[in-house]
Amino acid sequence: MSDIDLTDRLKILVEKTIKLLELRKYRVYSEDTDKIPAEILAESTDPRKPGKYVIWVYPETKTIGVAGIRELKKAIDEEGADRGMIVGIQRLTPAAVRESRAYNIELVRGGFASFSLLSHELVPKHEILTPEEVRELLQKYGITKDKLPRIFESDPAAKIIGAKPGDVLKITRKSDVSGISIYYRVVVSE
Image: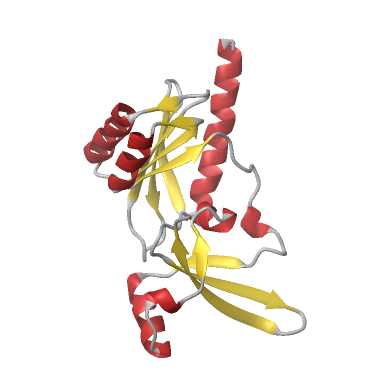
């Protein structure tokens, strides 16, 4: 791959990553695309879910090991952020996957859709409930989380909004026939 190809790929992945962050209600406040990996810093615009992200974007096929995860964790700590993300990787060592979970680092392998899946008319609105909303929901129906229907964290809509195992999603479907229907799902890993 030439330098031009890498630069173009990096630019495309950075643009896609910024769109993904916007869907998750994060505002980018810093971009450094003059290095590899490119670094994006973002903060939540949702007052119910405050927080900061440190995102590293790689333009090429890259294998990430534990050392790479720990480097990002160091950058997260230095920035005072509470989440991290690595975009553009193709291969991960099993130890790196375990380490990323321990440090709240999301791994986005390869490329991803360049359009908003959630804006399609056939895809219902997906939202992550706050802990307080989950408590109210469970209390209202007199159930526990394990009694809710499940949705895999690998579900495309769950991935886009950044749902993690244990989160509860509110899914709002609109229908010309039945009006508005609300469903709840607990996120589980496969």
